[in-house]
Amino acid sequence: MSSPHNENARHYWKANLRLMIILLSIWFFCSFCLGIIFAEPLNAFRLGGYKLGFWFAQQGSIYIFVALIFVYARMMAKLDREHGVEEEE
Image 1: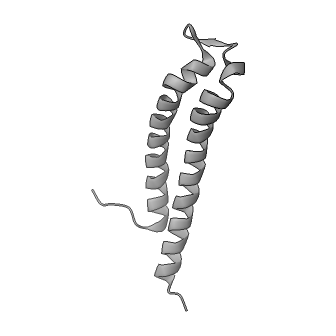
Image 2: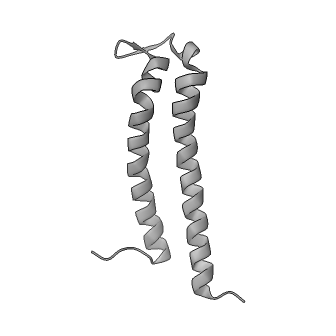
Image 3: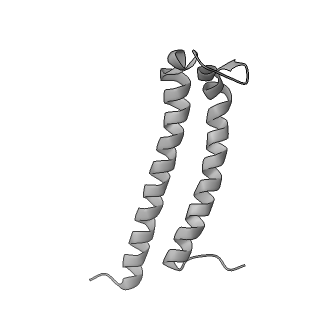
């Protein structure tokens, strides 16, 4: 029989893994798919004077990764509060 603490920990890690998979999937799509696979069709468009496929391969995936770090930190703080495991300041 599992204790309430173990059940809460299991739900916490399941939510954490789901969040990581979603965010890493977004980053994969933006960096690999938009920067490599779909680069040629995207190069028909320009962003800041650069072809869009090139921009995603060189800059866009980095910007998106940094933004996802902030999203992850904010979402994890919320998840920590929901499960009562937040750090005290």
